Image 1 (cartoon, one colour):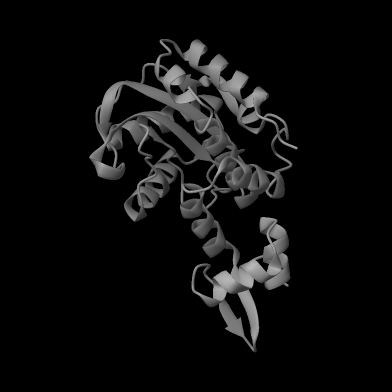
Image 2 (spheres, helix red, strand yellow):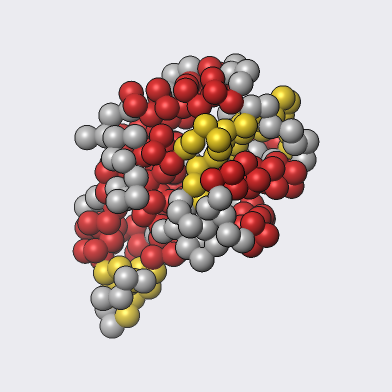
Length: 235
């Protein structure tokens, strides 16, 4: 089996879910898949895109399970967010007033690592992803990222955070404004989903979003994110 495709059993193992549940969801068109000679086949890119949409509705236990199944060798298991985030890639306040300027500035912040080889290509990939579906949540947080990994444009996976002084239109539900941004640039799908799952868990911690919004400096925001990451249990 090519790494680009999953069988029914492989997908169930990949997601950490029961085989019968996956088959039922696929039969109902809830999971993107197709039958080839009576056997279900699932394309890895389609599954990653489907998971991104599903993550918005996942409970903490579901995110925890997904994180466990998607553990990346590029990340430290117990602190995946902290292992990618750097105080250099945190910018508070973030000087941007439009969606495009947020993305451009966030890529510049991430570029402080010197690991972005083609910033123009990265920007286009992130913008293309936003055109498909905004990555903004209804709590004022957005997690912009490319639709597919960018191994040819970056040297290693990067996570950046920025907070604007006031909210801007970013495509959130009910036209709510967004003022906090986590930019995720991954070299592979497993790292991408691992980070998204952990960020999803952090955003569900009671009081975390409000505390992060109250930070005044890059150092303060960096420490708060890392502490929350350390307190989030993996196993």
